[in-house]
Length: 185
Image (cartoon, rainbow, N blue to C red):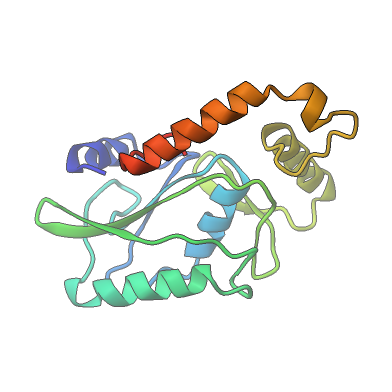
């Protein structure tokens, strides 16, 4: 991401898809509530080194590698985030201050942080663990968006799929890989 794009995100302030956290030396304690909430709703950006008033305070540069390592480790710890994810913090310098940011994509499944389910609403992360109807609603919404696990029992490869299109897609994928173009994947 470019500096200008990140500055624009900061100017817009916190919202359903943007969260600012101060993290001068350590990862914030509630960071993975936000990661979980973004995974369970529509995704978004977490920017470390910015306060709630949109002021860029930065990260202590001596701790950047430790923060990145800790974040990646926690993303892969089932007791912190379940199911785990692959994500990493990215570094950028704005106004001579280092920020770390990550874009969390919406997931096709419901995630838990320390065995609690969080969702994002407005600019907050909310624990909905005891609200079964709301969890069901999140699950049903995800089922409408993501269909890779859906079984279509009355379809067949032979009768319902166009083999010419499948072959074209294969050739296109190979061409894209050869040319190092991954944007469509």
